[in-house]
Length: 392
Picture 1 (cartoon, one colour):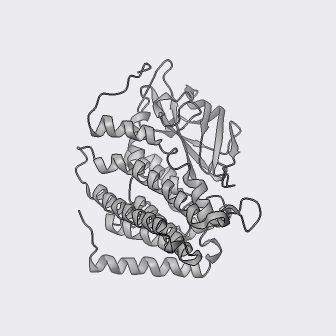
Picture 2: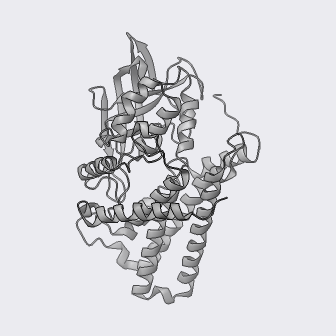
Picture 3: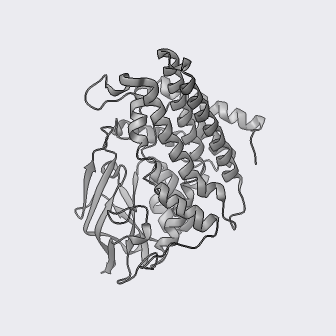
């Protein structure tokens, strides 16, 4: 496992840091430190295009498709410096980290030419159409249906928790294309234009006042037959391949954002005297230890080159960080006390730490609940018997 970086890699780190910090102190200083995903959405689309113009948008992609063909170490460094500079989360995270790599891995040459340049240029924003009201963590239970009609896929159904669908251009959709199929069989993976009459998007307001999530309704929504990634019935395999990309280098950038949050808590504790409370000090120390352990686990996970074996670090990572950050949010509120219950701006305009607490309540739910994660660890990691599933 590699824990350090070479001199050349540290030079690359300095280049990343200088450019990012310059942008956040200059032309894009108005978006620095934003913690919600929907704030200044149009301005952040401009930021996506600025990243692309300077070849920082998707550095791990091949140069042919707008990337830098960056090494794994360089991708880790950029993700860390991105968060360290206080740059807000990417509004096209789904496109850059999930849709793009999936198209690169499974798409045809024509599909790559159709989709990748727009994603890399920051012009095409993607969202994800996986979860449904009756199929949240259990993707195999999706009921959205697609049928082939006159050279087009016609889709009917509903998706939920589609992050940033209201500002997106395209959505990838796991849909059931084999009538009567159950479980992971009979699913297909479609790329669909969001901005069409057959797709309706309704926002879901969250407890932190943001409206990042959406319900998405499909009523005879359409896409060309060749918008399917992979073959008919391969949707489950494509979706699992996509989810593997989700555990990629962005995990290190995520952890740097966690570092910033923990530092905010420490600063608040010093400012209001809670740093003298032995119980608070102990909890801060425990949070620090947990964050460092996550970093080593992520580096081990990224260092794994034998993809024929199940990676225990990858299986445990989601439940590890989600549980840790939920506890971090609770620590933040205990440090702030009653002051953390008051918004200084207008309604639901929370500072960093109250927003951390409110949003982190969802961390153990989205992306696979803790209960589902435990099943995955037990079944895939430990080889224990699968739970009975009557529909498979």
